[in-house]
Image (cartoon, rainbow, N blue to C red; front, side, top):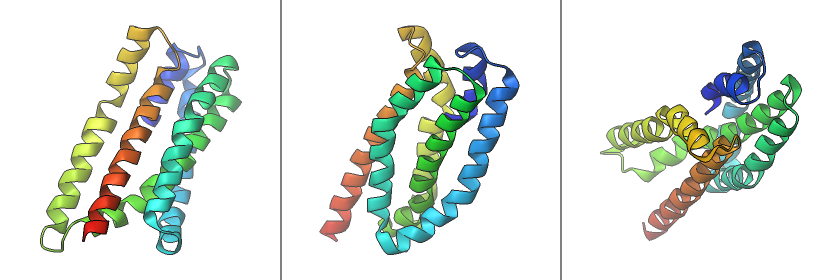
Length: 170
């Protein structure tokens, strides 16, 4: 979704392309800096806790972030919204590799981790620009990217619950 934001800036917010690209770059920097810290923090606070907090915060704050960005389209509001989304993504993705490696037994860890991660990224990430564009066209609602992220947050919470149950059974 973050990679779609330059297009969103141009088509929906009627901002310059440079605005979307600069906000996306800033988000990439936030992700680069915060992701390792989130992973390290998960060693002491627990992976499930950090990921669940990130998913819940994404669920409850992404719609207001898109509402704010659309109500006041500017570089500053886009930057603020994307940095927030990037920080939440860093919290989630900083802990994800360790949790995923804990799910699979050592005999199948590499295959299980790589297959599940790459299928998830392809389905939910690779098709995100297409789905978001379709949602905006189908609903006529510029806030559709927020709905997509909310859907992904709910799916993430369901997956975390399933992992918790699986780990508890072990």
